[in-house]
Length: 214
Image 1 (cartoon, rainbow, N blue to C red):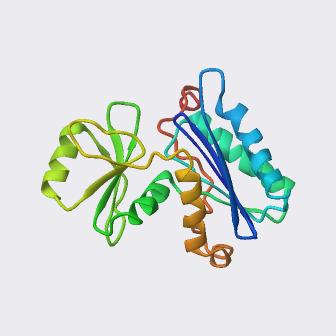
Image 2 (cartoon, rainbow, N blue to C red; image 1 turned 90 degrees about the vertical axis):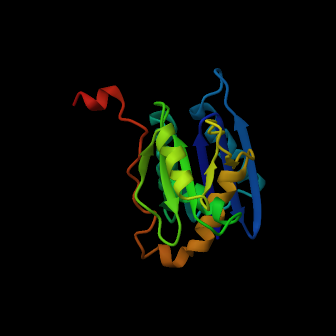
């Protein structure tokens, strides 16, 4: 089985492919002259060729929360690949699913996963026995929540600041590889008949202006 994982968020573009129990992965740090659209397909082509150009069975890419551009690029690329490899199925966990899974490998207690909304606050989801609904936290809310829940650890792929200790996921390939692990633990055969991760509707930080006007 061959599984392809795509991740593009903030200034990172990551690709990981697992074929015949071997993993091939590459990443690019984006710059003003290298966009996600420019970087993603060449990365996919390189890891696919390194693996021997196999047929792809599954494609994993997070559906957000994220920027309009990053989600449009990764989801459209995944859908294009699914047309090129007719047997391939797309699975789209949320960014929270991916970060929460990574956090669970490090700490078994309650975890607050944060994603920067880029509007002066954060999206947050608590992972305990059952994940909570996604909430919006401003700095005072975050301090109050952590004071009331001292066993809860803060996990993010950026430094939160505000005097708070953040457990970072910041390895250049960590989230593309985490998506592969999440997928394997969820069990591909069960996913073929289970709706888990099969909703491809993007979860934007905020709607683009032209969408709001419609």
